[in-house]
Amino acid sequence: MRVLITGANGFVGRELVRCLLARGSLRGRVIRSLLVLDTDLQGLPDDARLRRHVGSITQAALIRRVLADGIDVVFHLASIPGGAAEDQYELGYQVNLLASLELLNQLRNKAVPPVLVYASSVAVYGGDLPAKMNEQAELYPQLSYGTHKAMVERVVSDLGRRGEVDGRVLRLPAIVARPRQPNGLRSAFMSDLLRAFAEGAAYECPVSPEATAWWMSARCCVNNLIHAAEIDGPLLSQRVWQLPVLHLSIAQVVDALAASYGQQRRELVSYAADARLEALFGRLPPLKTPLARAAGFNHDGNVAALIRNSLNPAPPRHIPLTGETFHEV
Image (cartoon, rainbow, N blue to C red; front, side):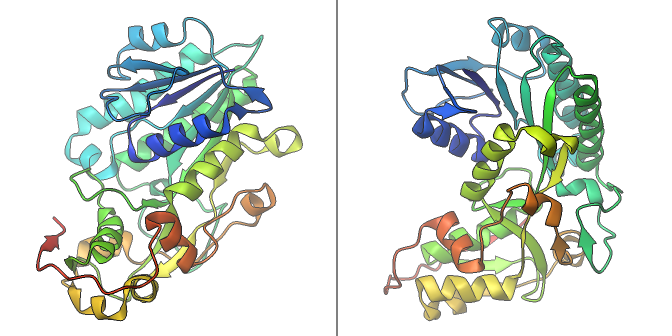
């Protein structure tokens, strides 16, 4: 079994690499080679099964070299995040759209269609959402990132129809808790809140306590990605799934963090709501996903499990608090 992960050194990619190496198998077969592709692969495990390919996915020749010996399963995670893709349109266009289409074209194989798991995004729905959402909602992307994701979704489905690529698309919510560093994600405040609270650092939240969002841990996300790769049979009459999510307010998340790390840390969180940011990422409605749940996809379970899966907190204890403040920009 030869498995490829694009964007392997990203936040979700690193967790997926770790999980697949620990499992050692996929779709009932031993993973002999785990090919990883990214512009920087430092920090990945030292494992003889890893085959490292450093470079940009926008290079068609590089993709050709990576696939030269054949491939069984591809996890396509590489992308330019939403905020960065909006600010740098050409870069987002090249990576999120053209490179994805080139990868799909090179994967086409009617004799033995490779399995492809594509990480799409809830950005395909846009920002003007109904009061109640389900997994069959219409797509109205309002950012270039969501537009490109929706376009690639259609191509994956079409190649599945043609029997040339065995594609499976997952629409991901915000995945937490990413390291606190510039990453081009406008939803980064969700991870920043978790990290700052866990570290005992002051944090100015750019949305109000009443803001609601869709949440998932990286651990849960990876489990869903692997499950998507292993689905077979009648379930593949559907190729696009909206993952189940936890619909939580900032206040609910802070309550869970305080239960894990101590009530005294609440005073470290202040609020300076950005109306535009909250309109885009802090007014998400409940989202029902019975089809995805029936197919075996899951969310973290509850807010306490989300915190545990994201941060692995120790039992509450008194830790000296710092005065450092993190501002969302």
